[in-house]
Amino acid sequence: MAVPVTALSLTELRERTSEKWREYPDEVLPLFVAETDFPLAPAVTRALERAVRGGDTGYVASRTPLAAAYAAFAERRYGWAPDPEGMRSTADVSMGVVEILRRVIQPGERVIVNPPVYPPFFDLVEEAGGVVERVPLRDTGVGWELDLEGIEASLAAGARAVLLCNPHNPTGTVHSAQSLRDLAALAVRYGVAVVSDEIHAPLVQPGVEFTPFLASGDDAAQAGFAVVSASKAFNLAGLKCALMVAASPEPKRLLRALPIEVEWRTGQFGLLAAVAAFAPESDAWLDGLLLTLDANRRLLADLLAEHLPEARYRMPDAGYLAWIDLSDLGWGENPSRRILREAKVALHFGPAFGEEGAGHVRLNFGTSPEIIREAVARIASLRAADHEHRG
View 1 (tube, rainbow, N blue to C red):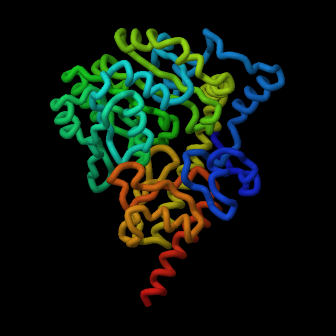
View 2: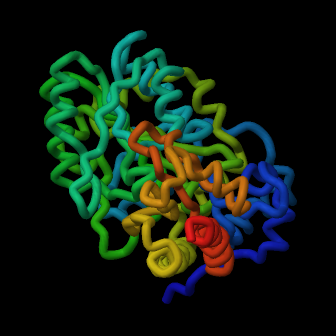
């Protein structure tokens, strides 16, 4: 039976040297970057300790258990058994996206993204030589979905690839199997590629059906690539390891043709940690993490309703990132600036996710309930100050 994972104390977290804990001074609560505040999964800790003790710090081997470990993980968690022969590793998901895009588009061709979306997507398209084509998510009133009509219009006008976020960052949307099938059908019809960033997939909440893009049907397997990693769920971003995945002959051929240097950029510690994370012995820890994140997303909803009733927040179905609309508070297009300056809480800037992010913030709730409560209390104090000033 899974046991909720408990976050480290603020004192312990302040000893970390990663971006989350070094970007701002100690009086700031950092809830901006997508790092979590939990101890490592025990199997991951053991794998890394074993490597350090044995001096296993050399080059990544040409043959590793990583692909097989991920394939088994995907079958257990998603009911999908990808072919390990269709996978190659690299340093991180962003690098995998760029390497694939460089080979499926020509310089200057347009790549569709669906804002509000993970800010590096805009830069990755440009790094790959492409031009960003924005087709925003459609707000249904209760959630978000792909604008398939808008995507088709862009494909008909010449866009040559789609960079998909599944599950979506920052909204936490888990795209439906039908929407993925429809997207894949469009990709095949127009002869374009879909590159699906599925880094948040291990963090889909129980009861929510997650469909890997490549598992959505034959069209997806023919037109698609996925890029996956243990880094978000297991907090391994600094160790550098991701997998590029293909499911049919032509995409597999493209991955096999990548230079060996792409694979050698994989971190040795990242690979060892990912194999341990994807192993069955880490499933209970991951299930416990999901329990903690479920409690945190609900706590955040309750706190916002009580202390910031103007905030509009839909609990995400995946991940530990909350997309919050603060427009009705009148704090401008980028409310995170005032929140950082006056409340000493660092949130991710909404406008960085596209113009659809005006008035929004992204808050990382992959932390302790105490830190979440303190962050909301600090932000709510600004609202109280505004009311007092107006009064």
